[in-house]
Image (tube, rainbow, N blue to C red; front, side, top):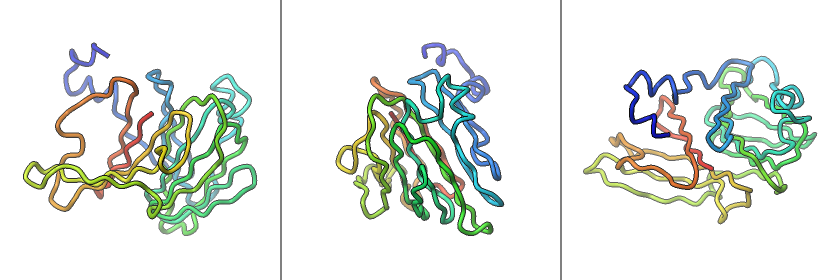
Length: 210
């Protein structure tokens, strides 16, 4: 990624910014050649939204999660995720890990007036771990930063070894303390894996990395 150093602001936006994450009654999907991660959002309003065989064909497999694992955090209203017939109620800030091999995943909102907003990451997987729901009470929180440097924040670790097993997907949700502005300051990079961020308008940041 050395070429990133040569890019101006617009060039960086063109290369790395995903501007549309949530679209009514659709799933969005962006494939990155960095770690082959897929990132996107699902916002069902008037109908359910499923992700299955049609996506698999684009990836050269029979169905979406034939060789992948999926992590989802709901940053909207209450909803459900049905995995191969098993329905999970996923409330605001609840998460669901879906293991490799799940053939059909269907997303729905409970109330169309306050639809669920399912933010997801999907990464290659070498083995299957059980599908599992994670609630905010089950996460592993870590508070970092300082009000003086405007970066005091709590990193709620949803998908980490202390909470559940995954192949390589780690996911968390970072909350900025009132009056704070920065999440990743001081600037840094990760040597082993890439990282994807989604920043919501209410300054709660689901942060995902593999």
